[in-house]
Image 1 (cartoon, protein in one colour):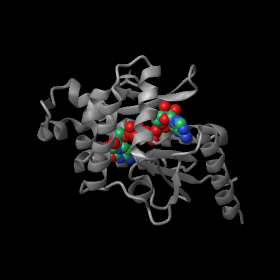
Image 2: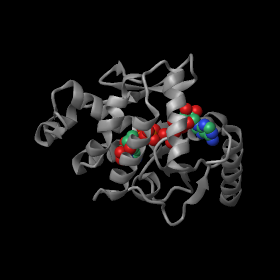
Image 3: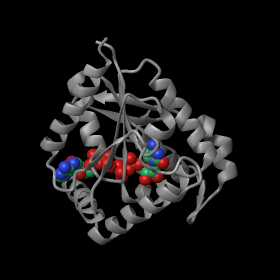
Length: 232
Ligand SMILES: Nc1ncnc2c1ncn2[C@@H]1O[C@H](COP(=O)(O)OP(=O)(O)O)[C@@H](O)[C@H]1O
Ligand SMILES: Nc1ccn([C@@H]2O[C@H](COP(=O)(O)OP(=O)(O)O)[C@@H](O)[C@H]2O)c(=O)n1
């Protein structure tokens, strides 16, 4: 069967990676969490003195961008890929509120996006990939055969992220998470380079009232429809 490219974009914390990972596992495709790459660049910046308070030393980051190597390795325990920054597993570190609160300004920098998009396009060259993020259907893979744009209300998304952090035993405040979700949505939609928007040919999914199982089933249906259409 001919392999296709699947792009899943949308607002923060709405369940993109949950559905992307599940689908990739089921159909034997590679899964790439592009947000993890921007989070890893942010962690590198925090750990290497590139932030002065909230200010980003963009000159320093640009000088070091070539030293930031991000890769993914399947974690046999979770069955999902973990993110590695220069050979070190940073999967837990990149999910903290500290990284969440600093990632969107880093991801708005043109040279950061250029470097990440080049790596993402290289990863998807052979197709057979599910990638989730903000600009996958618009910039990274504009020719993707299946494009989805996911959304849910900010309150529902913040609650999902709150439950997740709690379950991991991390300190979290619902109000702080809601504020972060809103702030990131704003920056992501209003930046100059590749702002978050639905590609004209993307299917819209509001999963506010869907369970994980329901959205998984919906996505599998969309995949089957597109694959059938591709058949000669
Ligand atoms: N339909 C859903 N209903 C309830 N919780 C969900 C749903 N989809 C995802 N989640 C949970 O919400 C949290 C955020 O999902 P995630 O896939 O990380 O979102 P995103 O990749 O869009 O940021 C996770 O803890 C996930 O288990
Ligand atoms: N393709 C992408 C993916 C993420 N990002 C940025 O990276 C941040 C973190 O992405 P993420 O997918 O981990 O966000 P969550 O929705 O999982 O919290 C986003 O808020 C965006 O600022 C981006 O600019 N482009």
